[in-house]
Length: 630
Image 1 (cartoon, helix red, strand yellow):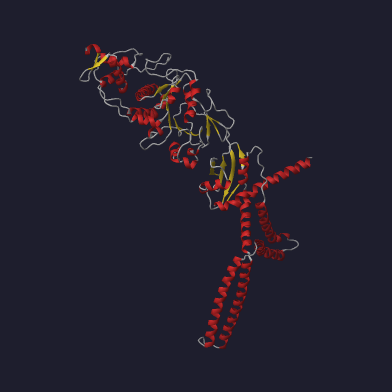
Image 2 (cartoon, helix red, strand yellow; image 1 turned 90 degrees about the horizontal axis):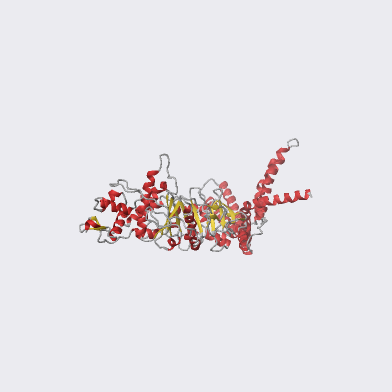
């Protein structure tokens, strides 16, 4: 049994080696077969008759030319006078005979091309050119005591054997061992990626000069490496994607990737017939669960908290379902809080029990004002030698999720009408606040996540602000509409490096670029439904003011920086505004200076106090306590 096993192992190794060498020899065999076929098709009876007629004419013209040359030589010998009639006549006849011979030779050459010798005969002639002289040289140089002088013949025989071996290997059918787990579609595609099928049909698709290796089945689909001759580069081969798809007969919906290979003359074709994430349950959520699974490697994909992030995806791509797991993580721990800004209101309703939500313009303006105040206060608390504040229950990490960036940008452009109390709210401050948070708030652990359906930064309705985009380090995208949107999300090198978000299937398949070493692998994201969000337990909701809803123990209130009257540390913004008026402040600017509160917050609190009758405004715009105005 040992010798049988050894024989089986040797045979398997030999077949494997021959299968690996066969694709490299296919171009030579294909060229040989195509030339042999061309010659066979030209060897018709009509072309043979034309060749025989041309040979007869050529032989006759050659004989005539020889006779004319002899007559001219005889005329020269008969007289030394170059102007004699005989010499001139002989010269003219010789010139005409040579011209006729030249014409006959050209006709014969064309006839030989139209009726060529068989390729086998031509090969024998070519090898005879070196085989016969080398054999003769070996015989002349050989001596009994110097056997090595036979090397010319040996070299010639080696060249002949090499050509025969390459031709045999190129015609050899690789023993394709298709995996039993292949589907019918994968088997069909693998057979068309076989070098023999490819080479026979490549020229009709404009792909001659390219030869693939037999396809291999991976957890992410079929992979074949392609050798390119001197006419091709990976870039030009990638431009033939439509022709390659047609040659393979692949479905239009089947995702096909063509990338550069291991060398400059190699390319790789990947057919995503399956996903490494198949069979992995990505429904629901639990603390610490991965955001998704890499469909190529099968590895879990984690998105750490505390990273500014952009999430893009066209309508229906699964953007909301894919981001809910991130928001659940951002609102779960005791030292984490979540704020959801959602002008469309739909997503905000799901998070009301564990996040502060802002839907209307005034609410969005108020929460962004508070966040900027909180940011400045936190930056002042960062100790020397640190670049970020330590999060705690008192200073939790605040994740600000903007659900639809285009609507927020449009909201900030709204001009509020003037009221009896003066100018309306300045909604432009919404975007100013968000830009400030994007630039400066990371050190204060206030993190911005920006989501949009249309990642554009110009036009009448942009979905992404350039200043905010410049600060974002994590970029995720589900399916997009155009390649230009992919470049905006992932950078100008997106198309060249394979970040083709506009080619992703829908829904729930994304790409995540978190650094220069990130690979453009599709990620199957976790599916988190609105019902799953609503079923999550309640969590404390962040407010800077003490007037919070019951059940929210967190109170983060800013004390006045330059108070004119000492107020309790727990005083709310409304109490501080009322106290400033009682201490003699009469204008909006004076109240803002005394309290150190943001101008928008002071304006809002003044309106509330006036509506309650606690403060009154005189005809000249002065603010007075209610009793003084009376």
